[in-house]
Amino acid sequence: MSFQLTAEQEAIRQAVREFGEQEIRPVAREFDESREYPETIRKQAAKYDFVAPNIPEKYGGAGLDLLSTAVITEELWRADAGIGSAISSAGFGTAMLIRYGDEWMKEGWLPKIAGGEAVSASAISEPAHGSNVAGMETRAVRDDDEWVIDGNKMWITNGNVADVAIVMAKTDPDAGHRGITAFLVPTDTPGFTAHKIDNKLGIHASDLAELTFDELRIPAENVVGEVDKGFYQLMNFFAHGRVSVASQALGVAQAAVDEAIAYANEREQFDQPISQFQAIRHKIADMATSVEAARSLNYRAATAVESGDDDIAAKFASMAKLFASEQSVRVADEGLQVHGGAGYVTDHPAERFYRDARITKIYEGTSEIQKNIIADRLL
Ligand SMILES: Cc1cc2nc3c(=O)[nH]c(=O)nc-3n(C[C@H](O)[C@H](O)[C@H](O)COP(=O)(O)OP(=O)(O)OC[C@H]3O[C@@H](n4cnc5c(N)ncnc54)[C@H](O)[C@@H]3O)c2cc1C
Image (cartoon, rainbow, N blue to C red; front, side, top):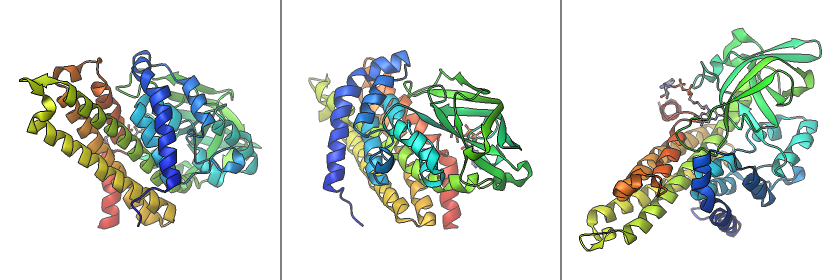
C-alpha cells in the first residue's frame, strides 16, 4: 500500500492549485453572495481537463483514475466549495454512461461534457424518497418504441443548467429495487421542467433544482444499461461518489486550516499574536491532524475502489465519506472559533467554509446511512 502520490498526481495537484488560486479564490466571495452559476469558470476548467477527468481520452477526457480525480476535486474545493462543486459536478452521471451506455450515447455526450460545452445531471432523489432510493415513485412506462416518464426528482445538482440527465425511474413498480431503470434524458425534451432551489445554506454557486417529468417521451434506445437493472448499476458507482464527497470535505477543511493559521499569525491580543496561545496552537494542530487522517483514509478508499473488490471498496468509501465529512464540519467550526467575532461575519471566509462543509454530511448518503453500510459489512 503506497502512501505517496505519483509524480504525475503531484503535478496534477499543483496545476489545479494554481488554477484555483488564480481563477477561483479571488471571486469566491462574489459568487457566494450573488449565487450565480460560474459558467465561464467551468468552461475554463474544462480546457485543463478538470471537468469530469474520469471521461476516457477516446471521448475527449483525461481518462484519470479515481485517486487523481479525488486530488482534483480536493483542490477545487480548497479554492472554493461552491465554484468547485459546479466544476466537479459538471459530469454527474457520466460514470454510468461510460460503463453502461451505448456507443451513440458516449459519442454524443461525453466529448461535449469533457470539453465544457455541455453539463450533465444525475437524478435519483425524490421529494418523498432520499435515503431509500428503492422507494422512488417516478414511473417509466413502455409505449411502442418509446418510454413515457412521469414524476418528480428533488435536490438535483445542475438541474437548471444541465443539457442531459441520467434519470432513474421505476419500470416495475412492484419489484422494489429490482424494478428500476436508468434513462438518458436530454433536458430539452418536452415534459422536462426544472424549478430552481435558491435558498441553500452553502455551496451557493452550485446549481440545484427540483425536476418534474410530465408525460416525457424518449426513444426506447435511451435506456442506459439494462431495463430493471438500474439500481444495481447505480450501486457500482456509489463508492466512487463517496470518495468524491470525501475529497470535497477534505478540500474545504484544508482551506479552513490554511485560513485559521493565517489569521492566528496576524491577530494580536494581550500584546502577542493569538498563535502564541497554547489553546489556539492545539486547536490548529488538532484541525490539521484531522484533515491528514481523513486524507489518508480517502486515498486508501480511492485505491480500494480501483482494486475492484466491491465489498472492501464500499466499506472504505463509506468510512472515508463519513470521517472526512464529520471532520470537515468540526474543523470548519474550529476555524471559525479561531477568528472570534470576525469569524461570524462574511468579511472572512471562515463562516463560508462552515456553511459549505455542512452539505458533505448529507448528500451521496447521509452520515447515518454510511454507518449502516459500514456496520452491515462488519456485523
Ligand atoms: C445540495 C444538495 C445536492 C444534491 N444533489 C443531488 C443530485 O445531484 N442527485 C440526487 O439524486 N440527489 C441529490 N441530493 C439529494 C441527497 O442525496 C439527499 O438529500 C440525501 O440522500 C438524503 O435524503 P433526504 O434528503 O430525503 O433525507 P431522508 O432520507 O429523509 O433522511 C432524513 C434523516 O433520516 C435519516 N435516515 C433516513 N433513513 C435512515 C436509516 N435507514 N437509518 C438511519 N437514519 C436514517 C437520515 O440520515 C437523515 O438524518 C442533493 C441534496 C442536496 C441538499
